[in-house]
Image 1 (tube, rainbow, N blue to C red):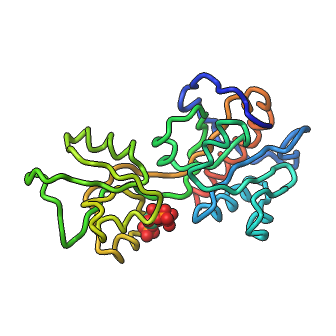
Image 2 (cartoon, rainbow, N blue to C red; image 1 turned 180 degrees about the vertical axis):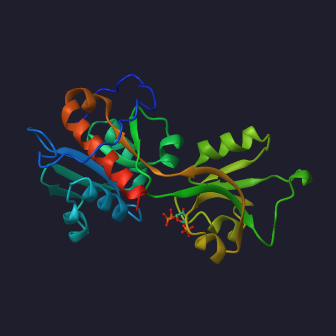
Image 3 (cartoon, protein in one colour; image 1 turned 45 degrees about the vertical axis):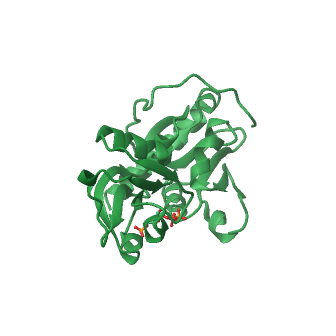
Length: 244
Ligand code: PRP
């Protein structure tokens, strides 16, 4: 493990493996060291553990020992990280694979393979504003938009020819318009409850978001067969989950 050199940027989506039947009783990972998997803590963690379970990798230890950050799960070592840090661990080779949201992956261009949409953590990146103070774009006001996603927000606003100051926050973005810090926000919405409880209304959906499996390109070269098994089994688990 440790800092692998940056690989040249690979194509974003290598050919998806056709999900097949789960391999029978063969070991999940062939001989060798465990596969290091970076998982995001927070609301996606449970769904990720469940999906890996369907794929034959029992990660129950991750939930049982909630303060531990490294979990020995047989053929897998699971790291539990802030969701925004998962691509960093995988890009530098500290983890072989990871579970990362499309939001984070598109905000920070990374040298990672994305072989699989895991279909978990579904939510939307939206533009929202106070129900009581809608923005009038024709008024030429100095518009301020608070967000954890300055790159995606800038791209979205530029595509629409809207001039705005983007204010980068790290969390609780909904507070921006409530305090006068910003006029609008760009943030993730899952149930819509946070927007509702803070008197905000969605203006437009910017992007549909789900979690992807990301793979370190050097790991893919060095540990190809082991990772192919992992990807195949996860692909089958995603398919099985879809059919529920
Ligand atoms: C996320 C997101 C919204 C909220 C949306 O925040 O940034 O604030 O969840 O979820 P909802 O539509 O189901 O209410 P998170 O809980 O990750 O915390 P954060 O604001 O500190 O980033």
